[in-house]
Length: 408
Ligand SMILES: Cc1ncc(COP(=O)(O)O)c(C=O)c1O
View 1 (tube, rainbow, N blue to C red):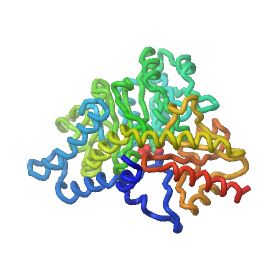
View 2 (view 1 turned 120 degrees about the horizontal axis):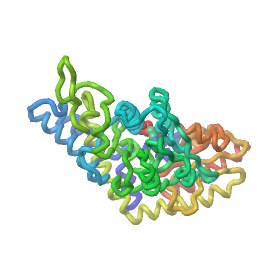
View 3 (view 1 turned 180 degrees about the vertical axis):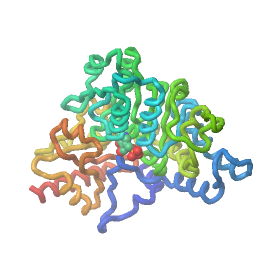
View 4 (view 1 turned 90 degrees about the vertical axis):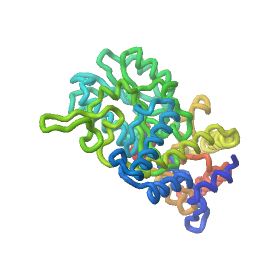
């Protein structure tokens, strides 16, 4: 596929801002919407809308088929079983669900430990802090080095007989570095510790297979892979999901309800109380098809590699610029670049770039502990998708240099 063919599937890319063509480089925050995903959302909303699982009528059956079909598609994509796929409203909800349900399951006891990587997004820190506060657990921080690389020798030292869970992102939303999840899983499992992977930034860039990664839990959001907001996935090993307590009570998550007590449905339905995202979940299916194609397309992968090589080189030549997440080997990084510039505020730069048509993220990027680690109040981030061209990357660095000159 050519980039032009890809771009035609994302109508928003034709927009202009302040009279300039939009150069959208905030894909790590949310990607553009794929036309086929929006079409699926529309089709279900306008033609097969009904509540799921509950009624015997034709429309309810069609809506349920779409929804459960999407569960099967996600399971197949991840190399999992359908019973291991829980739909949520996003990565944040998936991690909160897990933290709550693990906490109520009895698998974590007072004095137990959770290890969390220093580079995690707030969504993979705060739910665990809340749980630790409720259950008297201890949180240990897994450090990253000066280049942003997770310190695996520290992980080996930190694991103790009380460590029950380790939480890492497969790809950091600030550093863009790929954590060696398979290796981390093997280190954790050897110590009897479970591994939860935040895949929010990884799914768009890497072909994910949860059995291959050997993680116990994996979370991601649909809106970061070209589908609709308000949909997320939590994968969990079935044997573990079976041990987890429900996190919300309501319709469809029960087996039987009596005044004397309620029993709960098997996973995944135990974790899906109330009316679910009837149209949003099926809209994931075309996005997964798109991912399959783009992550196997030589031309598109080569384009991403060219952008990465160009930016790794070009950015580091800008005087006063400090890039965070410098890989030993480019294959250890996705096309996501966060940096700060001496004497220039990241927000001022982002505002000037916006006027030039370039959309980038600035600020703490929901990773305040990592900002503290590097001694900065914020950074500027440019994150790329398969529809971004090398010309856009060049326009971005040219615009950045101009903006720096204006501010210095
Ligand atoms: C690494 C990471 N984890 C979690 C999240 C939260 O995702 P959501 O806002 O879709 O719940 C994000 C969003 O930026 C992220 O980048």
